Amino acid sequence: MTRAGRSGSHRSKKKRLTLILAPVAALAVAVPFMANAGAATPSEVDADCKSDSDRLENCEFVPVQSQKNSFGPNERVSKPDTNCGSDTAQTKAFTVSGSVTRIVQTEDGSVFSGGAKLASSIFEVGLQFSEQDINLQRDDTTTGFTQSLRGALLPDHIGFFMWSHKRVDVGGFLRATYKEEQDGQKVFFSPSEGSAGVHVFYPRLLKSGTPDGRLWLRNIKCGTPQADAILNDANSLRIEPGFEEGGENVVDVEVPLPETSS
Image 1 (tube, one colour):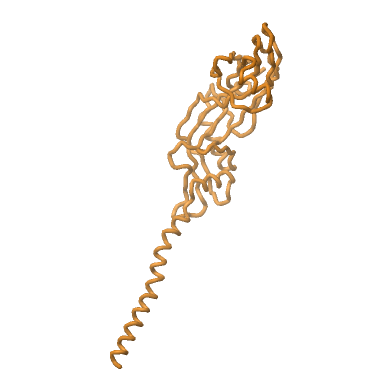
Image 2 (tube, helix red, strand yellow):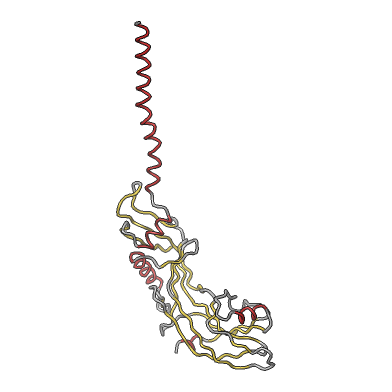
């Protein structure tokens, strides 16, 4: 009876030890998960800066590199006119309209304007890149031009005006400062500290305040796939080749910019 009693007592202690140790082990496993869950990810920084989240104390764009002679997309800025079937050149009148705005672009290509905190920082960064001979569009308002221009259509060609605006491309990253600590810190980055994955494109302006850039008249040989595609959908926003990059059936003639700023 005595041995049986000791044996029962021994088993009871082992059970108690197991019950005590199990919660401690569970707690040790849970700690890393809790720590990781508290940190702000790059995508969360993006979202909070875009929405001007109440969680933020501040959000800043930090410049890392810049390219002052960058060109924007190649845009068709007039409706096409035709001179197909003719063996002589003709001069036609075109209504030409273009516009620019400052944009912010993330690594995945998405574009956003950002909340008030970020917009203020981007404006200040733009001031750093403004020089005596370079005036930049630093806020997200739209600036444009509309002009009536005349252009010569070659024999058996269609013609229209193309435009590509000049801009300063500033690459950097977002630095978000949160009001409350997350995982022991308040500052987080997107896409990462020191990277140039976020781009801010500041359009360059002429002294008149209209956009600076390259404007050209494009002639395309009638009956070619390029000409037919444009005539079949004259109002489409097709991606066009750049200046003098259209190939053997395309002739580009640049137009002096002062004609667009009067």
